[in-house]
Image 1 (cartoon, rainbow, N blue to C red):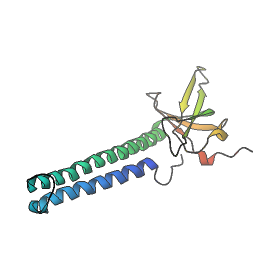
Image 2: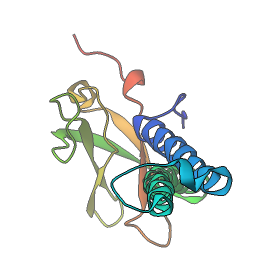
Image 3: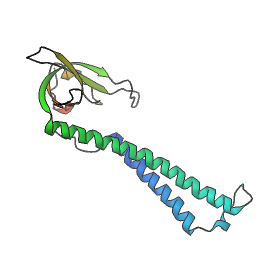
Length: 173
């Protein structure tokens, strides 16, 4: 399995959100601890209310951004751990890519990413099983007909990881 180098867009967005959220929450808390409540002016008559409102807004919005960012990061880390566990402990089978579909649940710059549909036929039971790869931003039509490795959990056949690297698929001319 070739591990993708670099950071995915989801991890980058999660990291940025978590960093900005932690920064804003820290500013709100530090301002509350070290700030002067009588130096704040606003629409309320009481400067202490303005001060608490300002600190609360910084902290609250920072925590919202932090939680959203951490949710992105945790989701990506769990997916990576699941794939690593399946590669280490799962059964290896070889499936043929039979089709490519656009992932219409995601739109990036007006385009949809693609995922590959792989089929495997068990030689003993002749049962056919279909697998979906993760989404890629490159067109996978040149991959149709190639064989990929699929790692399947031995106890739960619904847990699988399709080891597909679109950069390693030769171009068809």
